[in-house]
Amino acid sequence: MWPYPKIVAHRGGGTLAPENTLAGLRAGLAYGFRAVEFDVMLSQDGIGVVMHDPDFGRTVWGQGQVAETSAAALAKMDAGRWFGPEFRGEPVPLFLEFVDYCKEQRIWMNIEIKPVPGFEEETGSWVALTTRGRFGAEIAAGEPAAMPLLSSFSPAALAAARDAVPELPRAYLLDRIPADWEAQARALGAVAIHTNHKHLTPELAQAIKAAGFGLFCYTVNEAERARQILGWGVDGFCTDRIDLIGPSFA
Image (cartoon, rainbow, N blue to C red; front, side, top):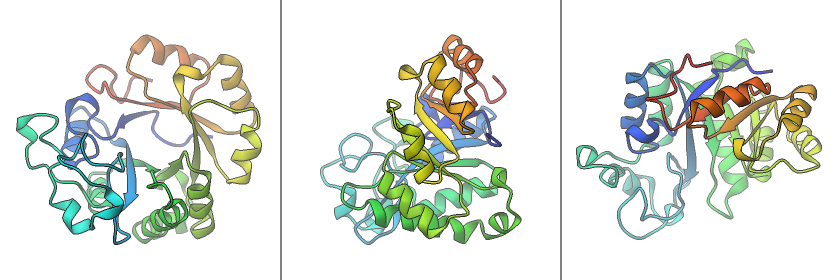
């Protein structure tokens, strides 16, 4: 049910480097992580970029929106100086740049499809098709552990990814587990449920596992809580505290 790494670096470097950057990946590698979760949305010209927020101002200096900016312009923006002066000039990565670095370094990927509102289907389809272009051999071999895992809070984006490349595994992201979670997950062809550990209970964990799904949590930053949810049957989690919870924690 969960052939993937158990402990995953959240957005690359967690609290040690600017999120969703190559510097974040390098920080994760320095602490032994070869598994990463990151976010993808589409630029104005329909190219995937690795960013979490649809609007500028938090991780990218200035005003504006991803959906109204070309990929070339985004790639020239500074995604590091907000975090610290030593990261000044760290660029916004293009999706393929990020994926290629992960493949070169043998970093497993949980790719969160994070569509700009109104572009759910386009983003899900683009991410799935573009990922297939880099993982054709792995898909042909039919080994899920060798493929990235696509996830999203957006059912429309996941459905588009499913329709575009059904062979790529998908996970349904849910902040709180609703009563009809199983019907939703099966309709999307999901292999796993990803959820906020703060709202998970032992009973819900048991039900998800009994139904045959993998169970992954975000974002667990305390070792005591990590041990607790693993004891409930949680298969894995992502963490910001890659300095405290290492890749072999489980």
